[in-house]
Image (cartoon, rainbow, N blue to C red; front, side, top):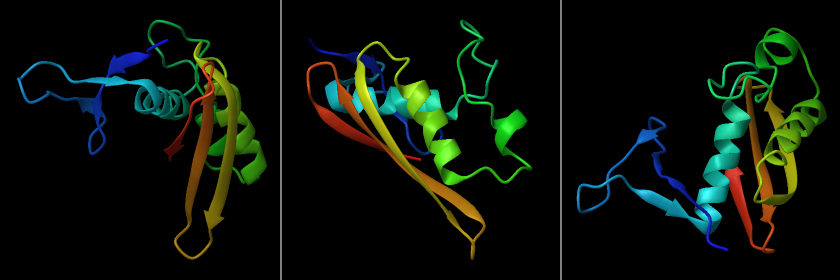
Length: 119
């Protein structure tokens, strides 16, 4: 099964064009990784077409001190809501020097293909 989605420009997370001037289309592993990254970046209740989607960033993360495991679990749960994702394993770590949080999520789709999204 080929999985496709509109490709986003990674610098501004907006639609992009292909070499012919048409909307760019991402497929298979890249499409899955991009959709998982999008799902993990959505704030709970802010997805226009389905307000049950999203991570409770405002309620449970920002201004709090959640564990990396807590954030990883939330990201995995969002990834598994996508119909083509079979498995998702997230890893999150805090850099105390720069006060930033970084993470990655490894995805296995329903066809057994793996890809990774870095957040």
